[in-house]
Length: 96
Image 1: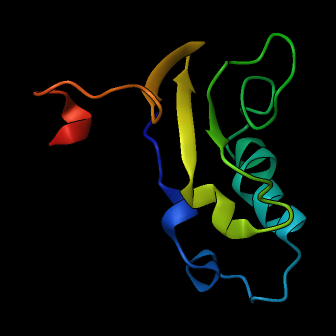
Image 2: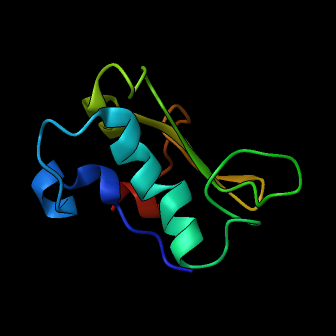
């Protein structure tokens, strides 16, 4: 499954008006999306026996949606695939 950088999209790109509560916008992008794909048993929330795919951010996106732009790390299948705090080496894909 591909990754959509949904946190970089402005709210109107989601078809949402700015007055939509942040909690509902985040739910639409996570659990509701998983339910539409009929993958809610694997994706969409952090629970035991679900895939360990997640994005950790700096701050609380429920208080400030822009916190989603401050990615600390990305985990795919339980392995960190992007660590914003790790030193980058020359030639790493993240430095290109």
